Image (cartoon, rainbow, N blue to C red; front, side, top):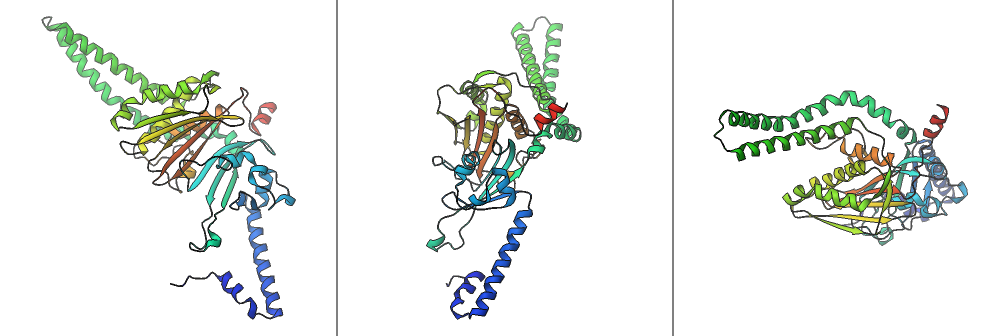
Length: 399
């Protein structure tokens, strides 16, 4: 079957048949169309970068140049690693081969040059135009960058306003969870009452009922505490923390779920003591949520890999699963408050993860491909000082 040619190929294929006048008209038409496309891209508020297969910037619109501090003279002559190393590392350039090659990558991250800002990075491979043409075997990358600094600064206020509309759904879920242990407590209290009335009954049976009551009450306390943490965030209590200790403790807490699904967890420590400044309980919540999502996403008898390591300014933790993955449509919405694809979910898990990581001066990124799995990367600053967003520091100064 003969390959279908694109309109441009058809035109270029007739160049030899064009006379000087028609050739000039064609060149002018192509120049106008290119100018129109460049004008459209330049009025877009998002930054757009196009990389070739070597990682060099072949195109950047005005907003893209402004976000990474790229001069007009550098466009098309500099690699992304040189112009914006933070973004390059975030999408996997300059690093070793990853276990899962993401079909699309979305990150919310902090950049320090040319200004301190938070951006959302959405990277998509540029698919080859002709599958069997060797000229197009190498694939580049299209990167869309959205400045979300203002959104980050006002996130707490936005969450607070949305909390009112969602509190009823959250309360309904908590009430449902409270129903079973309350019913169990009621039954066992009745048993205790009968035992007190008839002293001839065994003391061991009474003791067993008391123990069950205590256990159920503790479970109630845990559910309520988790609920309150979700709707009433607290300032982190920063201390020196070894991330490996928290990871090991989180895995122990998930022991029952892991055993039920016959899931193995492997831990690969790229650094002996990944010590950071953080809040022990809040970071435990982060790993608990991310690990829980991984368990729910994978099939039985699978594996979850946890990898720790160091970057120039960050300590990172990668939690990798070979589960269902996240679709292109859902991936950009993962960090949105109250967004969920689960029937019984409330959409606050990754929102909490995102908030805690931000409060710790870190960031969270997700690389995923449907049917292959997901990598969640949590990055923590190596130094004790937490950097502030543009606008946030200025606002505090004014106040």
